[in-house]
Length: 222
Ligand SMILES: Cc1cc2nc3c(=O)[nH]c(=O)nc-3n(C[C@H](O)[C@H](O)[C@H](O)COP(=O)(O)O)c2cc1C
Image (tube, rainbow, N blue to C red; front, side):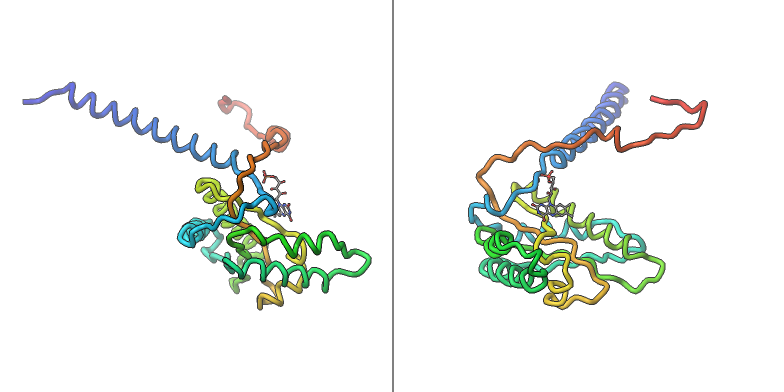
């Protein structure tokens, strides 16, 4: 015995479900992307993130795209008392590598204490590969994409993050201290923790002002 209406319902409800789940996926992603905010470590509350969640975020990072599958992203993770210890060292490197006329003592002290309430700190860098057809720019882009994956995953888990290139991050001194090769590039320090402070609203200029569309005459347009 056949029940055509069962087949009809089954087929069409699946189509409906497919469209619903596509919509939900986009809405969820959109919320995660637009709600993500940078959080200053000074507002962290000292609560610890489980190492397991940090590992989950690193797994997300590892799914970033890379030209030629070079996977150039590398991470050095600091946790517990290694975080303030790193920050003190980073502040010293900033002091040593900054000409006296540009040295800012307030920045130095801020760097020293930036990890006091953080749970983890991740130094993210691009390890330059030896494939001559892949440029350093491409490998930096891939590593930045990996970092963005961490930021979005953190937002989904309620973890506060600041991606920072302040202090000595862009100076050779930090690279040397971390034992990186000359062509490697530090993409940033990720200060991670929890905050009780509400996020400030994000703001962006209109994307239309950053986009140029091109059409061929006669093509359909929305
Ligand atoms: C490559 C990079 C470096 C950044 N460096 C710093 C930094 O050194 N200090 C800081 O306070 N924020 C830093 N930020 C965070 C930006 O200030 C922040 O993304 C921007 O103000 C927009 O705010 P939102 O992330 O909350 O949308 C950096 C962001 C990026 C992408």
